[in-house]
Length: 341
Ligand SMILES: *Cc1c(COP(=O)(O)O)cnc(C)c1O
Image (cartoon, rainbow, N blue to C red; front, top):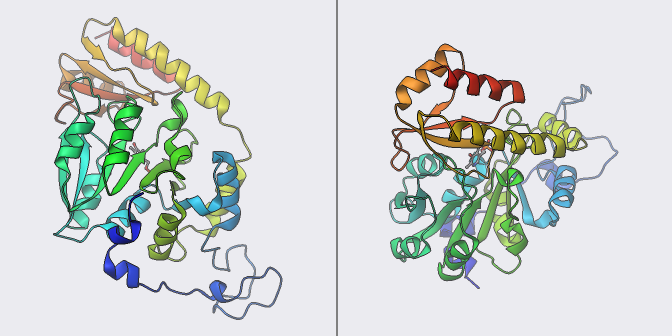
């Protein structure tokens, strides 16, 4: 077991969080004259539940975890930034991340003035746990892993991830933004055995709610407690809490199934195209495709008003475009357009 308390910055350990009116009294019915709100009911005149209790209980049930192991943030961006602020002393500590990977870990490091160390994935985008562990030193507080990884789409080897979890004495973030498109199981089932695992998930992809900005962190209850202490008191608005609660009544199974089957159709079509050099196997809702002339192909798609992500300047992704799986009709358009080039 790692020593969580030793990892937390001293100022955060000392912090007594802002106490809201609803911290002092939280009943249901009553005359609320404690928060200087407007008394005129318009559905949003009251402050939201700072602890998102109802939403948490629904999401926790859905994920097969306890509410005490769940943090809800304003997108995944919020827990990513909070983890830096909680664990990393600016200009002294460092974090290790894989490359290529999601850009937000790097941006949040720059904002928090924390050094990053990048460890390249192998040429097939597999994870080298030894290389990650070698990059860590006594000032490394967080290792960022992303699985399935963005922009490569592959799932990182479970055994390699576990070698890092078991041998690194800091926080291991496992970003599972695309887990719903994958047949692999979540690392959230391991949080009770490993206090250093922080799993990130999001409502932005499979759940179809990128617009509401809701990200999840699943971890040891002490980590959740500290995240909750450091967050803005009312980080999730009443409107968002209500909207997500309602949306969670609808199943996404059929949509996810269609995206996954469309991914395979798109994969096969791209695979046989002469201008395509390589299509990487993906467990996510996108495909990374290596082509002969990425800029030309990007522009030709753009002429047809098909916008994909040009990743060809990212080290490790030379020549690559990242194509999100769309509706069957949209994917058909992509295939037709590429075939006509
Ligand atoms: C899209 C994505 C997210 C989601 O971020 P939100 O802020 O929750 O929208 C998180 N991690 C990765 C790797 C992503 O690709």
